[in-house]
Length: 131
Image (cartoon, rainbow, N blue to C red; front, side, top):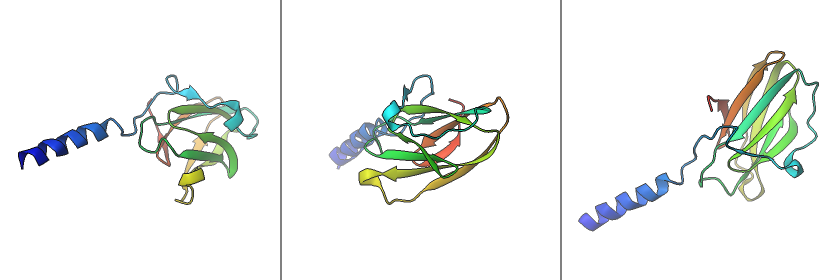
């Protein structure tokens, strides 16, 4: 019985190292140009999106959209910088490839001229971040 408890604790400790972790845009790897798409807007403001690092979900590529236009494909621990026009925009994240078909997550932003807005991609959720 004690062996099962020790084994359970060991498994939990091992898995905790696999959990997604927030990473700052400065620490994250930039998305390679081959996975940045021709999303373009008048550069009135800047949006920085960083995907969490960690083992869970790392094998899945997340396709990122701005206003319904494909902007980039994110792997774990990557960041992208996008020129956006001022005003409201809808951001979306959707898994592709072998992980595709499991839905889409959307959120709205309202960005002011000259603003640098940061968002974190945790799984498929796009949320504000302090990182």
